[in-house]
Amino acid sequence: MRQFLMSACAAAMLGAANTAWADEADTSYYAGSFTCGNTEYATDWNISRTLGGTVSVRVYYQRPGSSSSEWLDLAERSSGAEAILIDADGNPRIEISPKGDSLGARWLNGGPSYECQPFSVMRTESQKARFDALFVLLQTQDPLPEVARQVADMSAQPPIAHALPELDQQEYFQRFTSLGEEFWKSYRASLVKQAASRPLNSDEDRRAYARWIGEVSSANLHFMLRNDGLSMLLSNLQQAADRFAAASGSPSEAFFPGGGQTCQNLAAILKVDRYYDMEKLELASGVPSDYWSRSVAEEILGGLRGCDGVPEDYAQELTRTWPEIQKNQQALQALRQEQARLLALPVSLQTVIDAGLLQPDEQVVRSLSTNSRVYQRFFGAALDPKREELMKASVAAITELSTGPSADKPESAKSTEAVCSALRQGVDRSSGSREEIDTKCEAAEASIAEKVAVRVVAEVRTAFTGAVPGTPAAEQAVKLCEDLHSALDGAALLKASAACREERAALEEKEEALKCEQAIAASGASEDLLSSTIEVFDPSDSSGAALSELVCAMTKRNAQVAFSSTGVLMWEKQHMSVTIGKDTHTFLLESAEGEADWRLAAEDEKTLQEMARQKVAIERVTACFMGRPSCVM
Image (cartoon, rainbow, N blue to C red; front, side):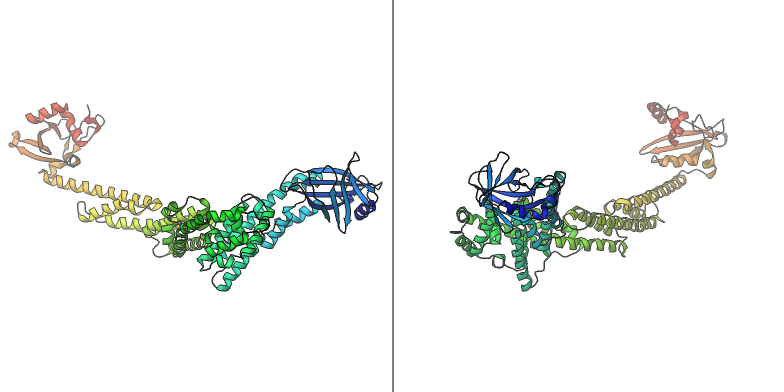
């Protein structure tokens, strides 16, 4: 028997130079698994021979999914027809026997637990080579079910990382963890994408779709052991069944393999993961419980009765929850109807404006379920192809809108803003690029805003041109500017508002000039008198102001100025009356001694009383009329 181990290792051992663990080339590798009690262990054996001919075996073992392992350093001891592996103290630990490329083994003493069953280990490649082969599979792009099946099988019993050379252990363990996560994430994304995009237009399409569902299911057993793996698989199955049903197919007829096969499938699932969960029964049946008809449920129940490897709990739970399953089927029908409504919406800008990227009616969703999984099932990936179509059409449409004949209309700016807002909010749930959407929207919005601004500014200029203050044309021009705030926004509103401010300022100047002309005409003064000057109290300017300026300044205070004279020749007096509202005050124009022609005086008792009440000196009254700062004492 000793010669067996030596011959099994001969190809690797011949020419070994130093100790048993000096180099991987000095070692042969075996791998397998064994069971102690109800616990399964993976095991890796590294068998080596020293220069002196001694055969050494390092036996690694660990529970599946564990990151820790144990090992024994054993040596071969021949005892007649048997070969025993002993530890350093000479204690027999494992009995071995050859079986072709495998070694039969039986724990004698010191196994990891009680009631260890006989087992075998198969000749294989080194742990490093097996990991490398697995890494190649894990980096497959868009993996098919066959690749997933290989990965699942290899990952179910991966090489024991602690059996690697010490310098490789950390790196390989981290790569196995990270690549595994990325692989299953990619695989699930591929399943979701295919479930949502495979054709379902004809009967043959639907038959092919059902066959694909069966292939996928057979590759998914070990995926269940991953975090949320079971719920993810059921979610994928539900989405596939929902789409199949929406295409006028019957999931219960096309996907259901029969009660007997459901029993076998469930037994296989429980062999991988023995913990109780009714979702496993749904996966085993190939049909979500939402689509179980009474006949399907009865056939499942019949298959579960006496099903080897399946606890009675599953049949009992199906019987107990059947009324609840039926109730849930009715509730989900409303969600299917809302989903169908969204799928039937036309691919148009108006759809994006009204429903975003297919946002469901909030009242329907809120009244039926707050479960995020239910929401994602009906309004997540199932709507993504339609969302993608909407997004692409919308991006093309807003580009066309920004260059079309109606690009200078405010309605185009509003529509573009609404569509771009909906696209930006929904882009994370579609396969489009946010950068592309931002680029296209920003360009379209800027182009439309510029064209709208040019057109509206031209309309504003035209409306105010020739408009006479106080006429309907002037009123319409002012109203046009007032309405811009509800019609425009952004850059277009800024430019149009600037034009409105300029035109309204010009109109106000026209209005003041017109009031000035009218006030001068109504003042009763001659041109000579109007051109003469009157003193205005101002320490920095003693030149005064023309009486025509005073008349015009008073219009800004809604005051009317009139001139009159009394007496003749040397007794003639010039009077100036100022009417504000119902009050009229009378002043005298007296000859001034300075640069101005006149100075203001008062002898009317009413006027003098008003000046005293307001505490205004007579020499400052004209400054007040003119609105000069020197009015204030």
